[in-house]
Image (cartoon, rainbow, N blue to C red; front, side, top):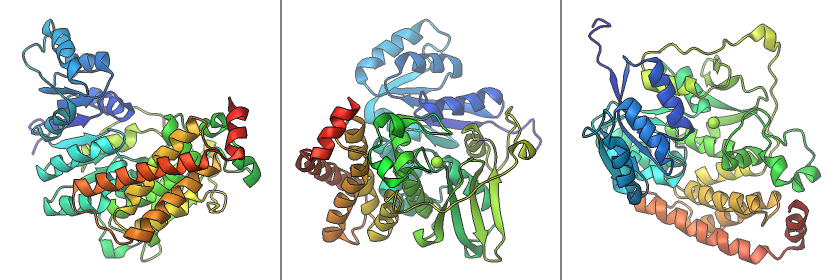
Length: 412
Ligand code: MG
């Protein structure tokens, strides 16, 4: 096939006004002949969604709140795309965007809301570019079974998992001995335990390498983010968690590695920029040019590695315990952690209590439900809901702690 006759790849984008969605559209702008945006969904950023609809002329636009449908229709009425765009909303809107005829669904939503549309897209036979890690954390076993049943590829957009995906190219599963996820170590990498125990919200939010949302910044400080990525890797690549290792690499240049049975280790390197894993997913199995700075190894001079400290950062081991405990346990841990992080950000609990809460809820689940399967969406949502309830109760019981009180005052 000649280059001229190649048709462009049709993209459905869930979360088009978020960080992943915007950077996806940035890649599309650089390659208008290669990609065609057929449907987009966003939450509350209505004005930006209207701008995107004008610029990319998708056939379907979805917004979270039904009240915004008429706002968007009116805003588009005077534009070139008037009459060519279907404006839809809510959960049904997400399903419509995910199942509009396409060649790749970019799953860029954050949290549990992305699970249902991704499952619907898989069942309709559409390939997934997955940035929404909660999909694999909440229901990895189920998503994996569905993707296999419908012969649908899931191409990771998380930077570590994209690195592994690239390092796995051309290999057979029985040749892979280990996956090695790299981890920046977060803002408390070099801190003593006592100092971490008294860390303030501001200190936990100050990530050394990345500027990110509050939730993922706290998850990086506790290493829960890396734990969730271990779970994600386990299901994305069908490798048991015991063969997924974590190594702290403070420069964030090696994005992850694969060790093969002959002890050859392949790594993927690059300056940290999410447009790289996005472009890999969009263009797969080809590559497209990105106008980004080159990695200069000489200027960099060195790369450092160290063992993650499991005592100072207990959340990492909780993820291993969850993924080997039951199919539902990762959903439980993820939901408990969301409640814990919110409580920490709201200055209701101290930093080390995030891990304590997560551990308490996970152990309570495993005591009664070890081996519980997640056979459908409802089972994942039920595990999530149970954990949120249990975590809220834990907070009420433990909030009276004098330590938590003094922390509230200290941080106010
Ligand atoms: Mg990541």
